[in-house]
Image 1 (cartoon, rainbow, N blue to C red):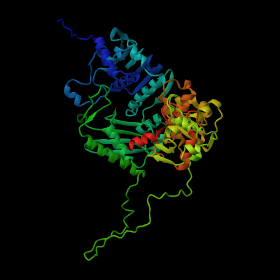
Image 2 (cartoon, helix red, strand yellow):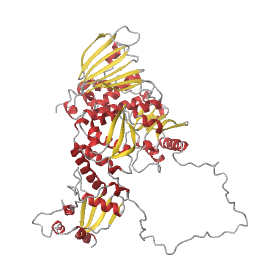
Image 3 (cartoon, one colour):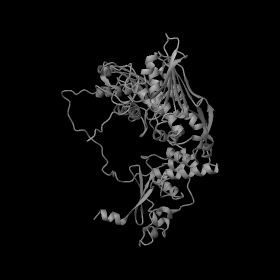
Image 4 (cartoon, rainbow, N blue to C red):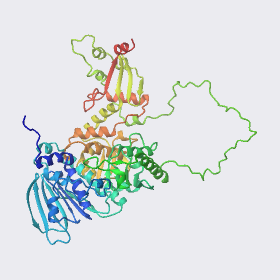
Length: 608
């Protein structure tokens, strides 16, 4: 039998390794920025074209490389960071594996120009798809410049599955934030398609966060600081006003390295219990400093996961530190022992008579008696417009059986009027479902999907007719956005105005809200706009080309009532009326069922 096991060629092995390390243009940005920092660069520029497909260029003014090092840097597992296995437990740099440059060169065309400060000339190295093309002297500034062109040119399957430029640019900026925040003492410039996105001078941590996250962060961040023998904790946590319904502004750094850590996130989230609404996610920028030998960062190629020697103790310290920070600024109630010093605490004497406590009770109280709703106003009901068109026969759309099936429930119900179909009494289950009796059994409505359908048709009609009413704000509200949020929103301002959202460009990364749809009454417009932006940015495509349907869908998702919202009888009745005035009350715009009917036959079978 012939031998079948062979060593892979270096070019193939490098492409396989690249699949782990270089997953998209943002992966290249991460590796090159970390290398620039490790080289001691104090002024770093990032230039990107076509979201990294055409060009990714990183230039630093660091130590540079010699002629020999410039060539060796592209060999697999060639690194200046470690010498022996024990060094893996004392990592002080961002990179150390020696895989990044070899992986990048395996799937792109790379040009390296570098010069040390004590050299008169620099070195240029050119590599394409792991193939060495040449090396020659070149005139260049001290430091290093990497040009990565035509990413994935030799792996078309990987290039094909890249997302839209908008999405890939979002991932690139995400990686940039993870480097720019901890290394706030370094100046950064970011360009995309010849437009300057960021020009960040060296600054303090708070100033860097505000420059990246927007001016609204300045007044809504609380400093935390804790020193122990096990870990030092510092950074900023957001006040409740900065919390969002989506993830994105949660940053953990261990020894200035960004990490993901669900266990530590719970320590922060639990510290916010009872001060944030359900589903809200706090913002935080937290730095943990630990001895390098007490963590293992060598458990994943991207180095964003670490193992701590004593996670439980760090969890407790972090939780206490966040609670202390919130309490210090009166965000959560804290005990003031001095203020309560005048309270008289009774002392049990030897001759004190011990008596059973007396409890006052009302023997006629019935916990199941329905409480009258005196003076209750339905906020939701007031935000909806009643409709004259009540297509109740559409209750049964989607439930019809074939003509051959006799005794069809839908056929029977379509002959009945509304009074005979609906009992008029509604029950809400777990803040999620609305249940009411119909002639054939029970109708169950998903309240969030129902409201999404109602709002979707309203927004879409407004976008088409461009005549949606807008409820003007008494005082126009300025909303500060991050740079990428601002650039993404600008092309859609005119369309949003057609949907009743009167947003206008204020410049400098801000917009001003002059009016919003009546459906937003009682909600925070700024939160809804941010949630809408987050949802829409997950969509594929250029914001200038996003259709009216997509805008209407995401507006409906962002502004519909959430699960858990308690509704009154009046609110449930009005929502049901609104739903059956829609063109398709049975299904949501993304094809999910809004309602279902549990027949009497099904109920009887369950109870046999």
